[in-house]
Image (cartoon, rainbow, N blue to C red):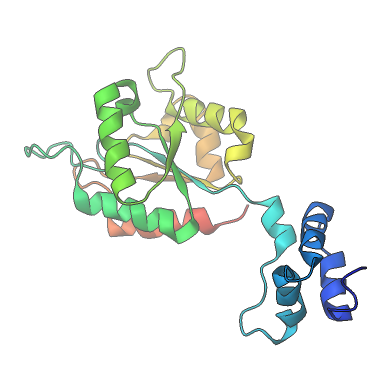
Length: 212
């Protein structure tokens, strides 16, 4: 190529093995003074940290998803205090999101109340946790949260990479499509009198990191 005279065969071979859209993009860096990406490719064999797998990145560019309930997860249902969201439990959600680069979809009934939904979105945003939406309402809202979650997953295929975790204090395995959720092994149930604990956090991190 027109870059061969400036970059060695290693760089060119690495570039040729990339997916065609990315390869075409990198060729655009071959103008004089704009060869940073190819220089990184050329140096890849001597770098302490290996270059990212661009092919894998293109296959799984969407993030994992945390389906988040609020009552019994981010607070204690029998807590007489006025605080609607416990700061410590909220920090655990941030730790979970940070562990896998995950985003949040609100599955709580709070999503049906504009003020409550805005409150939890503000609290998460203050911790740099991204909320990308909320699950839809099932036609029969009673005991249908797994169905709502699966509907969101099926209608937003480009917004997740197939990995997700559901945080809820209800026994979702007994609700509509709960058997599917149980089979997926992506449900972490909290104790509503305790909320989202460190043990729950460790379990949820393991779920998000698991590739089925």
